[in-house]
Image (cartoon, one colour):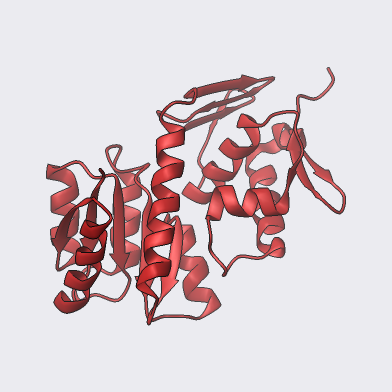
Amino acid sequence: MARILIIEDEAELAELVALNVVREGHEVVIALSGEEGLEKVDAEDFDLVILDLMMPGLTGFEVCRGLRRAEKSARIPIIMVTACSSEADRVSGLEAGADDYVVKPFSIRELMLRIRAKLQIKQKETVEPTRYHIGQLIVDTERHQIIADHREINLTITEFKLLTCLIRSAGRVLSRDNLLNDVWGDSSEIDHRTIDSYVTRLRTKLGDVGDMVQTIRGFGYKLEQLNQ
């Protein structure tokens, strides 16, 4: 059983989602504003957050960034739910730290499947190593820390997830579809060009160490230690 927080200012929609989440065997807490949501995360422990984007007061973007800044909630999966369907809004939500993005009106069944997928990924991550060290690159998933060539690197949550996915499979080639599923889940809003864009930004931030992220033409990427 997981504890799930729903941050949604529409009470009826929040109750509908909560009812279905409880039917899945999980415990649910509802917050009707962004401010209340942040307070509840600070006071309680949750395994996943369902977050509305357009709310009075703090917006979903602001709440999402607040959750990612706090050490306690930095790694909680966040599914953003919103009526905003433009590509710019979707990208902004993902860059703010959301793990997935569902557009209203949405199918309850689809939302439940996405919740299930995120909880499975979270459960898998809890039994894996938390520190990876290859060449001049260190990734500490517990501390959310990246060291590249003795420099601490700041990454967005999505860039961090992408690098973690690559280093966990170091030496193995990962297809773009593998990365799409592991980093963005079932999101239909992300395509291969978006993945390529994130890889380019990741390499730039890592500097010379970024050369370890190698392109496998026509297929995907792999992370491998460079020959010294």
